[in-house]
Image 1 (tube, rainbow, N blue to C red):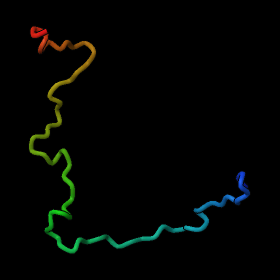
Image 2 (image 1 turned 90 degrees about the horizontal axis):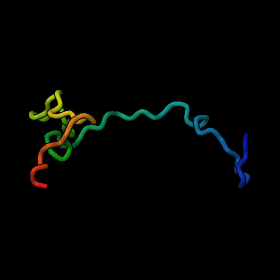
Image 3 (image 1 turned 90 degrees about the vertical axis):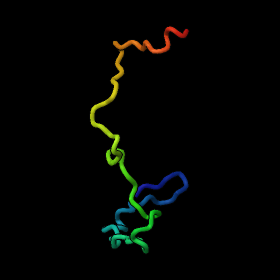
Length: 69
């Protein structure tokens, strides 16, 4: 084994933990409580669309507000 500057022997932690512990799936004490609700994803939103509303690229020009300058 290698030793670092302080003289402490460096060991591989995987030698001590062969199999990770397996825990049962956690169940909340109150199943319908909003504090234990799963977070919603963006795709769950009714206003979500796969097509982008506007695509910005280097060839486009922003014209809104130029008359006000």
